[in-house]
Image (cartoon, rainbow, N blue to C red; front, top):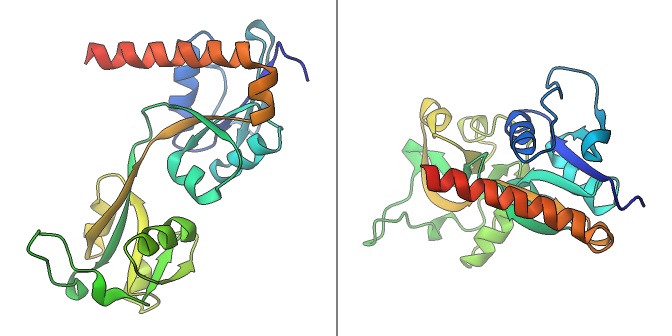
Length: 226
């Protein structure tokens, strides 16, 4: 393992542009990494860094097994994949929320606190890409549900009686509203995180900590400037 080089896994899709911009701002110039290119591996000898481009859900696996020293990954993916990696830093972009949602016509009554009473939904079906997060949330409030794993278009499931509820990530809630769904419970908020392979973190500690501190300093400057 070359202690001078870092291999960083970045996610394909909507998080890639922000990831490239952030690394470039802290001295790892990778603005030439092309979101639309078929190229998935970039060698950056000037900054002693290698960039690999992966599916977001695969990044924790690449990092856990040491194919990448570091990775940028959404907290939602990190929780669902549950890999043995070290979470080092909240990178503050890619914000989204996990929510439970139901059809407008099916929402449960509200409690005096203003929250929806979910108790009547025990043992119901939940369509989701995140069965681990779903089961963890409902078990935490003393309920059992049956997660139904889907890979997209969660909003369709209640409309065709596949499930009574969905658990999904939302940014604005627009898609829910367009499909006559209502948020009935928040689960958690998620942003992009920097993760590390545990062995690499020990063997490349100085190099990794230097990058972490540069990222932290830059993020604090951005917060202060707002």
